[in-house]
Length: 263
Image (cartoon, rainbow, N blue to C red; front, side, top):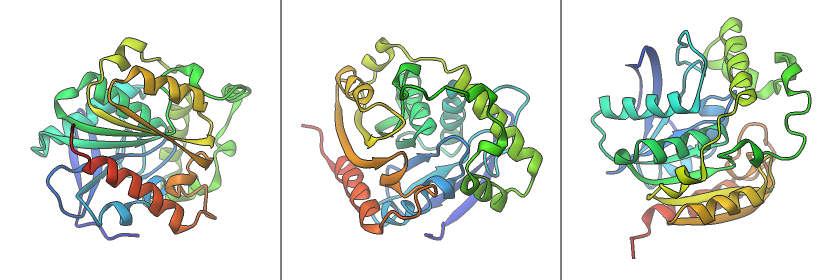
């Protein structure tokens, strides 16, 4: 794991928000983790590649990892607002954003509703509408308990926040947000003007057809479909067998996209 150059908390919209900074560069790349996750469980293996070529700011969202909770449900809209507020308080006027899974949905909300701070976005394995999830995703979802949460995600959470009650809270709030999934509209996506890289795995929990549809709605979108399952391409901690080479290829695609000049 790459060693961060800074780790800090910032008071943001009533929560104490944790973030880490890696590398150097002008326009930072903001990393937004998936549901049930921390910076390390989503991006621990990807950050060393990304930080070689630029500045990376990785955040933890409401109730996740080291960031505190607030007395309200989670929403992608609020997460987007929290990230935008954090950057504003850090005096960052323009950033690139990379979101994985639920973090990708948050990234779409940032691009749609906070466009002034957005340079480019990378959305990995994320949906903008409930229909984008594979058939059967919600079967039994409402009955899920923390016992159904993958052990590597629990372990990663408790490694940075050894509080079982906080883990339970995150699980319940993430679950509720998915049960109440609020769609973005096609018009929201059509309104995204930022250059966009959409990435999905061929055996993802997100339907590749859904991401193809997204690529048609967003004017300046590029699409990549890679072999694997949810999280394979970034070496998320549920995919320990993934080789560094696979992660390096993903990082190379991201770096190439970020360095492309507008035609």
